[in-house]
Length: 435
Image (cartoon, rainbow, N blue to C red; front, side, top):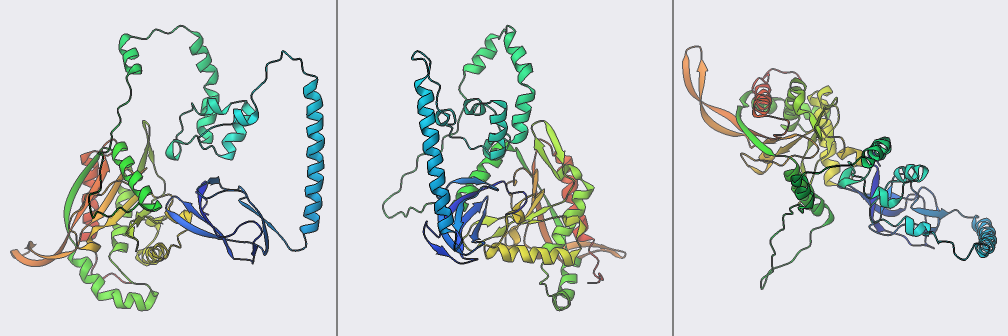
C-alpha cells in the first residue's frame, strides 16, 4: 500500500481458518479508495486466525490474519493453554474482588459499553483519546476534517488544546439573540432524490463499488465547490505536425507510444507554475498553495468506470518522462495493477474528452483540487491566418480547451489567464523540436 494510504476496506477473503497456503498465494483482496489489490501471503503455513470480516475498514499496520508456520503447532498449543490458565486465574481474582465491594456502590459501565460507537477512529486517535481520558461519546461530538468527516490526530489535538478555553467560556453566562435561537432550532435542509420506480421490462442493475464511490464524489464536489467553466479554442497545428513527424522515431528510440497527452501535461505543468493559485486546495477559509505539481489523468476502464492515476512532479519531467509515466499508469489502470500511491496526491486533473471525439466538456472538479481541464478532439478547420503579405484562409488543426474551477478561490480573471496560458504553450510548439 502507498505511503499516503491510511486504511483499506476488505472486499474478499480467498482463505478461511485452517486452510494451508504457500508463499505468495493470494489471501485477501482490499480496496483503497478506487484501487482493488490482492494481498499475497508472505510465508507458507496454515491460516490460524482471520481477524476481520468482509467490508471491515482496517487501519494500516493492523494485522488482519495469523499464519502458523510449519512446526509451530505444538508450541502454539502450549502458549494457548498457558494463556487460558492465566485468564482463569484473573477471572477468579476478579470475582473475589467483586464480592468485597459494598452493595450500595453504583456500577460503572463496562469498557465495551463505553467504547460503543458507529464512527470509525484510527488506532492513533483511539490511543490519544484513551491517554487523555476522552470517551467515545465525546469523540463522536468532535467535527472531523478527514475523509468522510473522520477525526484525525490534528482534530483531536486541536480539541484538547481548546478544551480549557471552552470550559471557561461555558462557565460564563451567554445571551443568545432571538435570531440565533431561531437559527439553532431550524433543521438543516436536505436535498431528497426523486423516488424512481421500475417499469415493466426495465432492468435493475446495482452499482458496483467503484461506481458508488464515483457517484458520491461527484455529488460531494458539486455541493462543496461552486463550479464555473471557461473555454478557449487553440490552434495546435504545429503540435500535430511535430508529433506526426517524430512519433515513429520516438517509439523506436524510447520504446514508448507518443500521444498528445504528454504535450498537454507539459503545457499544464508550465502554466501551473506560472499561476500557483490554480495549483491549490481549500481548507475552510485557508488556501493551500501546493508545492508539488502532481497532475492526475482521468482514465476510462474496461468496466466503464473512471479512475485518475497521478503523475508526480510533472513539472520536472520532459516529454519523454511524461510519455513513459502516462503509458505506465494507463496500462496499470486498465489491468487493475495501480498501487494506492498511484492515485493519491493529485493537485490538478486533466480529462481527455477528445478520445471519444467530443469537442467540449464541462468536467466536475476532483476534490480537494480547485480546477480540472477538459481537452476536446482535434479537428481540421478553415481559419484566417495572418501572414506578412496579408490575411489568408488556411486549413488548421484546432481544439477546444475547457476549464472548470472552484469560484470560491479562482475568479474569472485567474481562471481565464491560466487557460489562455495553456493554449499559448500548445500553440507555440516548436515544429523542429528534437526528441
